[in-house]
Image 1 (cartoon, rainbow, N blue to C red):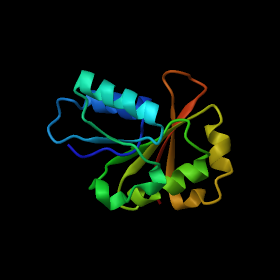
Image 2: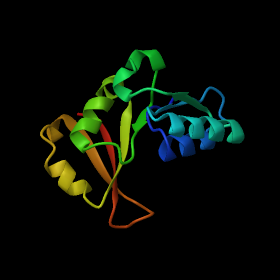
Image 3: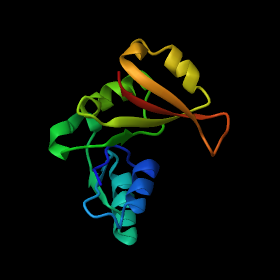
Image 4: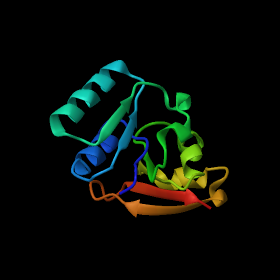
Length: 139
């Protein structure tokens, strides 16, 4: 099993809990808010989640320092162009991006200046049928 990338809070923690019994699995949760980091650390300890909490801004992380990363996720983080820009160092090394984008996902893709540089799949959310999750690979 590989390693998993960004996604503090809900996405990263849920994935880390699901991977708790998978040998070698690591979910890197990057979060600059100290209170959220404290919660993530406590939840990781209580659940045995396969998580490492990085108390910094994502811009401060050197992609190579985390080793191989299979996937990057971010929920309610930033506009799609900025989210992709910050995920790019991992995507250039082979990671896929999985971004819940809500009901405006198609509009966000339409306004993405460099959409043709990516292979973008739109997946229907099971939580909200009007919302979408984007699975994005380097094009």
